[in-house]
Length: 295
Image (cartoon, rainbow, N blue to C red; front, side, top):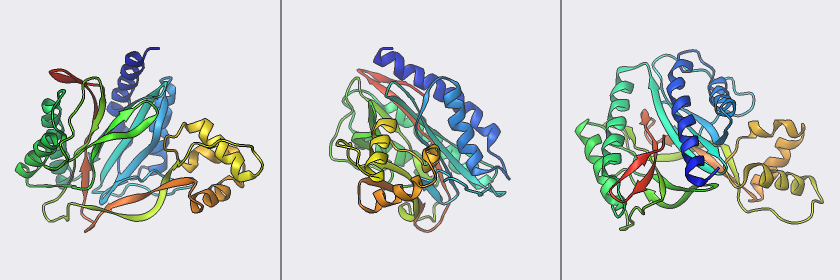
């Protein structure tokens, strides 16, 4: 499959899965089951998850993917961000949707979705990322909500989820411009007007990535696991849930790799004042005079 075919196939499946997400997200639902159902839908469509499905609730903005044995469930009056990626031959479609049962959540959801639509209309080759951030910020401000200034969209390359250019959600940036033929994820995040508008690292990590490509002889449990991580995930993020087939000692070995710096941990990100957060996200392919929405 060619690069464009693989990317568009990933996007097609991402759209299909995203449309099904609201039917599995409701009060009482298990966060673990939500993530596993999303990932299973991706697999059932002949693709691979590009990273662990994030199920980030209320003030948790990003990077929470239920770990093995998670018993958390959705309470009433929730705001849940379901962020997932679909991969075909290393080409990634990244998307996210907010599901909520509250008036505040619906207001935030509408704001980020409208900001995303406006940002996508701005996309074209040569457009400065700061211009996109300005559009996002202006729309969110009109809705009376606050952008999360230290969360951004990002360029996507083959087997590289966060590559090169970042796409801010405020009028910021160093003059970087979108390039024709490149792929970017645009993802507005917003909180309520009295939120801080910034996330902090708050909880232990649930998502990990091999920090450096492993090479060398297999001579210990650690090096054996490093080799497996390199071969299985190609440098992309993963969940410990995806390692449970490797034996009962795997998670303790994995923790040693995290402590020694061979594996990077991504801590859960929470709004600084614990205010609720909403998110919307599309992946786009930049063209000379616009873009194609992949997701």
